[in-house]
Structure formats: structure tokens, C-alpha cells
Length: 105
Image (cartoon, rainbow, N blue to C red; front, side, top):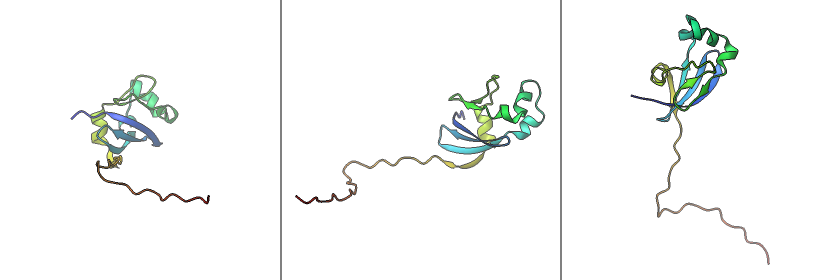
């Protein structure tokens, strides 16, 4: 299944909080993947560079062009919930309104 990352937030060390297009929110720890990193991944081992992570609307990426497959991130992440959905009020149902205070004439 093709997933897309909609939002990324740096947490600590090599942990990121990711929100996916299906509403799922997951914590992904990339330390294991980066521990043996070579070539371009060496920059990501530097924590200050790792913090420069961004979301491009498809996945996560860094200024040097490194990105990760969003399906890999989805599978590796620990599920912490869903983004709450806004409830729609069906037509014909009245909502409670605050009573108006009467002012003296």
C-alpha cells in the first residue's frame, strides 16, 4: 500500500513523529538504520544535521537529498494513534447555543 507522510516532527535522538495521509501517527526511530550508514547517510549521523528533516508532502527528506520510502517508515513506525477527525453535524440537528444576556433598557 502506498503511504504518504503529511507531517514530520523531530522528537529526540533519531526519533521522529510522523503523520501519514491515512491519519495514522507513528514514532519512527532511525538509529538502527543510520548506525551503519555509509556515503550520504554519514551526514545524518550528525544529530544537528538530522534535525533538519522536512516533509515534502510525500516522505521525509534532508537538504542533501536523502529521503526514505514512506512505506518503509510506515512499517517501521510504532503506532501512537490517529489524528482526530472533525465531526460533522448532520443537517436538521440543532446545536446548543449559549443563552444571550438581556441588557437593561
